[in-house]
Image (cartoon, rainbow, N blue to C red; front, side, top):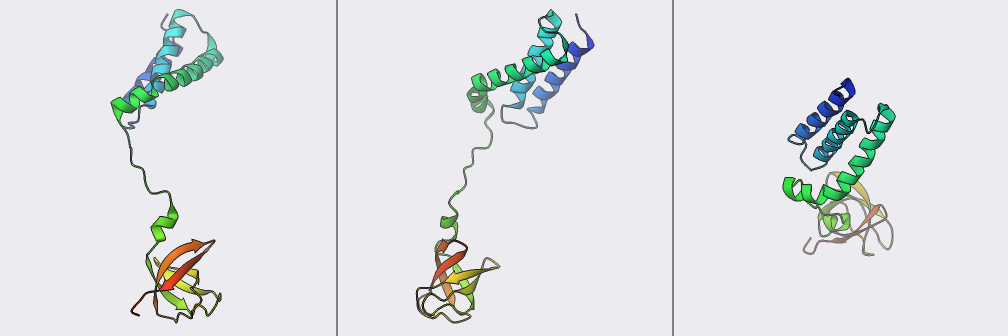
Length: 151
């Protein structure tokens, strides 16, 4: 009844369930529960062999994850931080320093923004080297900038 494979699946299940203490999130405990289910099925003789055991584990894992994921998320918690996914908002209204003359017209120049040089497009006027500019948006790989008033 308690063969090596039953003990191996049960031990793996226990290790995975204990690993939930280190890796919270509610997934690892469900994978461990699927291992315990496979150990029980092997002990009862419902499945035999490695292929059937792995198949049962895979199916049981999917079913447990689909059925109980929301419950374990509420119970365990986990990381719920949602960061800004719009990169355009991160650069909007930030200051940069002109490194190569921008303009006149549509002539591109270069600015230093957050320690990195970027191609830059202006508002049509000539913006000299050393001037402070405000980032309006990004157009492909170039930053669109305007001179800071009062410079």
